[in-house]
Image (cartoon, rainbow, N blue to C red; front, side, top):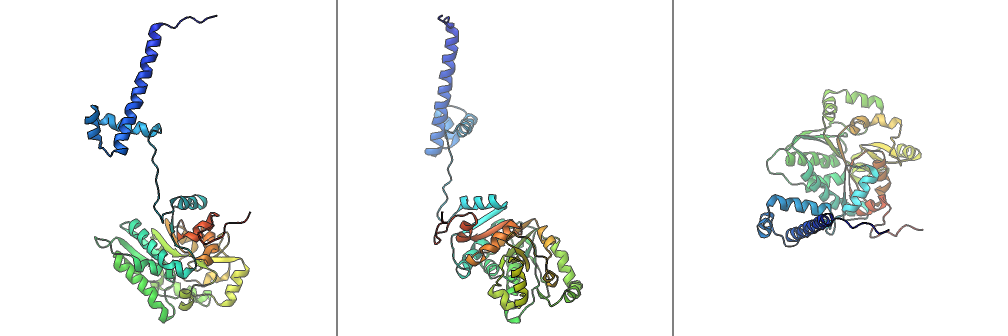
Length: 345
């Protein structure tokens, strides 16, 4: 049975709607091409096409929603946005900075320092109170690379997170770190006038009871961000020279317990879990609980030998911002770096 003919007026309405829709899409495309391809400003487009400027804006928004305009971000050489986002998503980080360098620590420290300086210059907020671990060659390179910001003071305090007294021949470097950071930012420097490591828990208790040391502990409670190195079980040359390291017997114990790295002389295993040992009672520095309560914790570390420590620090939530090199970054998500062989089948 042949269906009855549709009323002519219904066919006419449908044709009119189709024509109107086609014209809308055509106009939308025309506006998008003028704006995105020819660089014409919205007032000029409105004048050219004899439509209002608000309508031009609406058409551009609709073009984006319908996929007529697709925005593609093309990172320049040396920027690894997709890799940074993948690491941040996998480990639940606030931010990741991947530096275009890889290899051993000596090769990556200057590049990490420069990148960290730029990161701090662009993210430090007026009124921030910064805690910093002083026995780190990478952090020393970072502060050395920082530039003064116009307008003077923009940090309230710069506070040492770990005891800052060590071998006098090396202590000058830690003191220089704090002094330069304070000069650049206008921050009030808060020094920890005690060693980072002592022989016994009794000695530690006596030192932390001193009013000057206690006042530093109070300053830790006010911190808005911290910047720390991530150490491997093998101490860095700067830390070794400072004298603030565990003796070989203690290092052997940490290794036997599965230790892979530390933050502020608090050692953890490959999953980032804090090692429960009596050694913790000999450290003069911020406690793990107080440290973890700091809103933003920036870890700066790189080099092939530190991979296990960096990965563990991420798994254990010791840092929520990571600045590292391309080689370590690739390994964190299973991507080989430029100078690494791809994983086997």
